[in-house]
Length: 125
Image 1 (cartoon, rainbow, N blue to C red):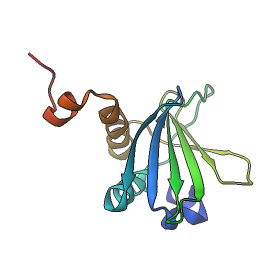
Image 2 (image 1 turned 135 degrees about the horizontal axis):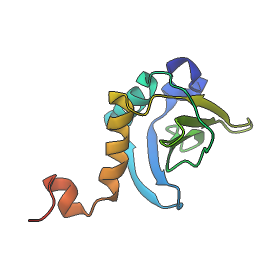
Image 3 (image 1 turned 90 degrees about the vertical axis):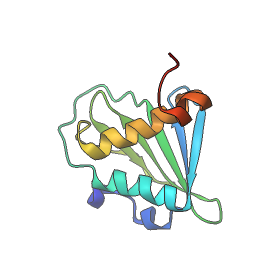
Image 4 (image 1 turned 45 degrees about the vertical axis):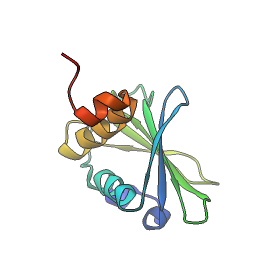
C-alpha cells in the first residue's frame, strides 16, 4: 500500500482513531503514530469487493494540527479509502488477513475495550 498513500504521509505527527459511529476511540502520537503508519504502509495488496462500509478510520494531523489525510478501513470488503483535503476519496484494496492489517485491527479494538481489560489483556474470570 506504500505507493498509494498521500504525499503528506511522512509529515503525520498525530493520529486519531475513529469508529464508524463517529466516536473518537483514541490517539497515537510520536513513535506510536509512526508505528501505526508503518503498519498501514506495509499492507499488501488484496482484492476489493463491493460493500465499502468502513468500521474504522484514522485521521492524520501535522505538527501544526492541520488535517493531512484520513484513511477509512473496511475489513469486510478489503478497501482502504484514502482522502486528502481538496481531493476525492480513492479506494485502495488490501489483504485484511495480512499480519499488518490484523495488527492494526487489534489496535483499533484495544481502544474499544474497557481500560482494565485492555491493560490486563484478558477477560475477567
